[in-house]
Amino acid sequence: MAAHYEDRFWTSSDGLTLHYRNYAGPDGGDKLPVLCMHGLTRNARDFAGLAEQLCATRRVIVTEMRGRGQSDYAPDSDTYTPITYVQDVEKLLAEQGITRFIAVGTSMGGLMTMLMAAAQPGRMAAVVMNDIGPEVDASGLARISGYVGQGRSYPTWVHAARALSEAHGAAFPDYDLDQWLELAKRTMVVTQNGRISFDYDMAIAEPFAKPGNAAPPNLWLAFEALRGVPMVLVRGGLSDLLSADTVKQMGVRNPAMQVVTVPRVGHAPTLDEPEVRAAIQTLLDGVE
Image (cartoon, rainbow, N blue to C red; front, side):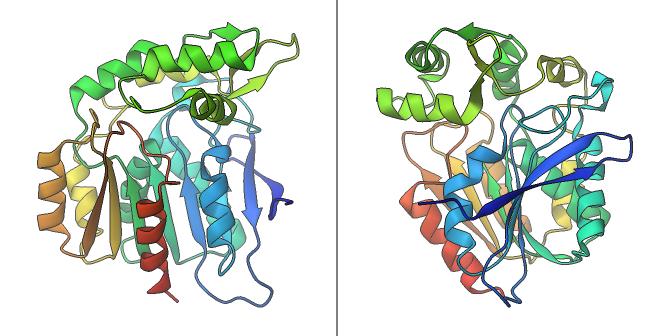
C-alpha cells in the first residue's frame, strides 16, 4: 500500500534546506495537526507506522532536523543543538500558519517539545513524550556518547543489523534478526559507494559532547509549562535515560499525564507497540 505522505521542504534562517513528511489527513479535516520530532541520530522514518495510523483523522507533520535524512548538513556543527532545532521547527510552523497542535517527541524530540512549550505555553493541546523527561540520566548520556558520530559502515543489511544487535542488545534483549533489520533500515541508508551507513551527519557528536547541549539545563521549569496538558509518557522498562523517579516527579507536576511502560525495552520504544499505539490513539481521540 502506498504511503500517505508527500516529501516537502522548508528553509532554515541560516539557509539550510530542511525536509519533512507531510501526511495531509482527510479532505476537509479540521482537527489539530500532529507534529512529530525524532531523536538524536534518527529521522522521519521513525514515525512511519504511527503517522500512517494518525493521518486517518488529522494532518501529521514529521520533521527531519538539520543533519539528518533528507535535510541539509550544517556547515557549522555548533548549530546541532536542541535550541537551533527548535528555531528551525518554529519557522516551519509559522510558514504553515500552525498556532496550536499536538506534539510527539522521541528523546531529543521530547526535549524540543519542552523547550517549545516553555517559549509559548498553551499552544500544545496534547503531548506524547517518548522515553525522555526534564532529568536525563548521566549513564544514558554516556552510552549515547560512546556510539554517536562513529561513522561505521557495513557491506550488507545483515552486517548492519548484527552490528546494531551488538551495540544495543541490552536495550532490546528480545529482538530477533528481522527486528534488527527493520531498525537498521530505519536508521541507515545505502551510500553512493554501495556501503550501508547511518543516515546523519557524524558532526552532530561534536556539540553533543559539550556541557548543556545534550540536555539543556533547567528543564523542570520548561516541563512546568505543560502542567495540565493531556500527556502520554512512554518509558522503556529498561531505559537508562529516563528513571522511574523522574517519571514519578513528572506525574506530580502534571496530573494529566498517563504513563505507558514498555517491558523488556530500553531507550527508546518504537511507538509501534500495541499498548503505546492504543494510548496515543485514546489521547488524540480526546482532542478536536
